[in-house]
Structures are given as structure tokens and as C-alpha cells.
Length: 142
Image (cartoon, rainbow, N blue to C red; front, side, top):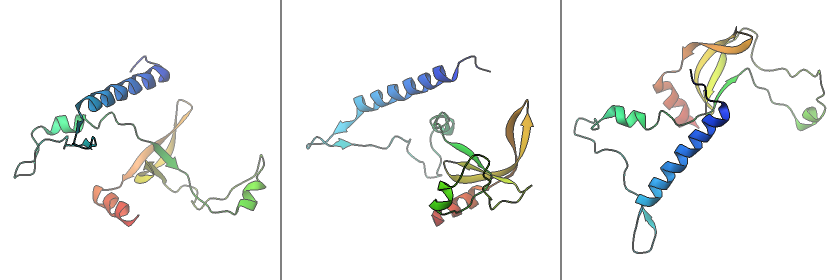
């Protein structure tokens, strides 16, 4: 477990991104008009469809931050109702008690799970993972 605080971890991530952007800027080629010319950053694909080093390819994306959220439920209400909300108001959601909660990555459903409490903190135990083919089907519908 790391002893870094969230601020130092965020600073380290920001420094890594800044360094990567500087490296990219120094290697961008330009055409006669001065416009950038982008070349493929991936290794050439062989006839079998595999790249030279798959582990290196996956390492490139492992540190990309994503937004993970757990959705308890949804509802649609008019703005008039929102303006009447006060402390103690109850908003009825479309989910039933005991139903699995949706786990979303950048707004896309990837799993469902149930709420657990560990050391006085809420968590979610994954009970069903959405298959890659189902994820692609859902993305293509939007």
C-alpha cells in the first residue's frame, strides 16, 4: 500500500501527463503548411493480427484515470419539484430495495453488484460482469 497522499498522487499523475505531452510535442512532424502530421503510435500488425509486444501495448493504458460510479437508481422529475426539495425530502427512485446496483465506468455499464460495509465504509461486491460483447452492443446503440 502506498504512503502517498491523494494530493501527491494527483501531482505525480499530472507530472506524468505533462511529461508525455512535452515528449509528444517535441516529436510531432509538420507538413509544408505547418499543420501537424500524426503517425500511428502502435506497432505494425502482422498477418495473424497480433502486435509485436502485447504487454507493452496494455502497459500504455493501465494508468489512464477513469470515473467509476455506482448508481442506486434514477427518476425523472420536473424542475418545479426540484425547487421544492428541502432537508428531509424523499426522492423516489425507480430501483427496488435489494436490486443490484449498476457499476458504471465513464457512464457505461460494466457490472452490477450489492452494497457492503467494510470498516465503516461503503463498498460494492460485484455480482455480475457485463460481457465485452454486451458492452459493445450497448455502446453501438447510443
